[in-house]
Length: 213
Image: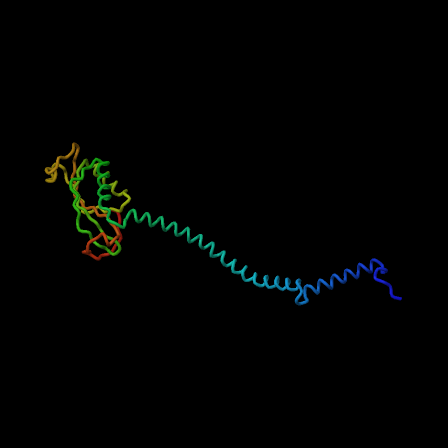
């Protein structure tokens, strides 16, 4: 004789409910069209798409590190460029250069008597701007003046230096020398710049690199 479900022993009822829950869960996960099955399918699809993205992100981390290194290198190059533009400026900056010479001479106790600009000459990568200079003063003051020229921020070459005693030089008679003047120097000072717009047609195409002397 059949009995109702409520008359079953409670352990048997619990086992039935547990089995039914398992069946419904499995059906929800795997039976097409049900919400759980759709969600499971979407999850698997998202995980499949995630794996190549994770690999791509890992590869991009290398580029991120390389970008930081390149930025550091670029900053260093920018500083080097700024330094180079100071010692070899783009423009002639003749007025500033003459002021630099005059300040160095005054601080050393030297008098610049003549400063004559010569023809600008073009080299392969830069232009030479020479000046013929006559200066006088005490011997050690003249030496200090040349030492100061070597420490200027702008590159300067001193060439064709001729020193003579103030008493024996014919140049001394043209100027009133200061007390203590012992030598008169005649030399050529050359500085450099890079802009072709600031220079006339070149007379020479010889290459080379500017340097201090």
